[in-house]
Image (cartoon, rainbow, N blue to C red; front, side):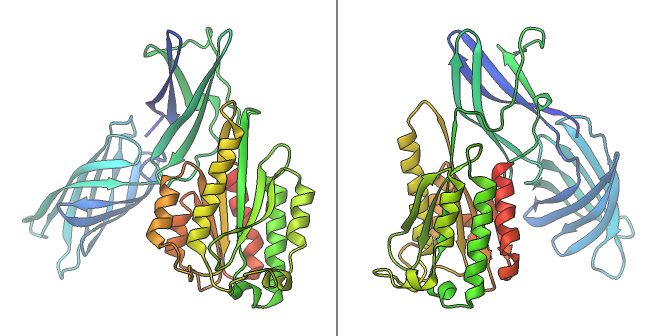
Length: 389
């Protein structure tokens, strides 16, 4: 579909009502679409070249090779597919007609016939493609005389990941539902305006599984965390606070929020496994879930301290090499805290003992996996790039 314009949010300033809209450029039909067709699982995996579409359609236990076309016209675009397949001795035919009411959503009808043309199944289908969906959130609106209006917003895809690379041309401004002429007003996107306070909590697992392992793993973690600080912190970047957790109920603060990269890196590099294990009350278990909750609470406190004159953007980055072993906070409670929070939450997992599914739930904004210590730097860099984009 092309240049889908959707009204997304409004800001009231005096008697003027301004609306901002996004010209979301959906990725056409390409991608993976999943849903239900009359209580049967349905999955479309499609590629697209111009207006021609091809791929597979899985309906229950049957798989069809399909091809067709799309008009790619608007947010009410259409898609028509035909194909053959099935799991029987004789091939079956499949036809599907869909409409796309909004980016990432597809509804329509699917019909399956025997090789002799007998209708075997016909049902209504509804599918989603999270990578195409666009969620716009207006965080706050601020007016400044004589006629400047600031709208602070986030744009995420259906998986909760930030949509990057947006430009002025991707948005339209309306007054009383009428587009404002470019001759009467202008708009500019500032990815990191000075009125932001951007803060990150870096939360590191210092449980026994890490500190009692090969010392080279701990050394790689320190180097990777230091490189992360180079990419994220600084005067033009984030203020970062550093905490670690073990099996104790409380997380441990290593550094207050700061944009002093050298000082933050020195804190990381000064850590030793022996020093942490010698600290009072060190517990070799892993209170992962409780640590995530407390990391979010640290961001809440920082937001309160910031006041109302600046927009606060908080990010939690949690590293672990295992699962929650302390059982002080349930998996469900930790995920619920992440879901309810207004902060971004990323996770980094190391090795084969992690619960990847749970870490992805805790890292709703992004998850990076490192199979071994040599891959840690790339994993930290992946998260840093996403935060900075």
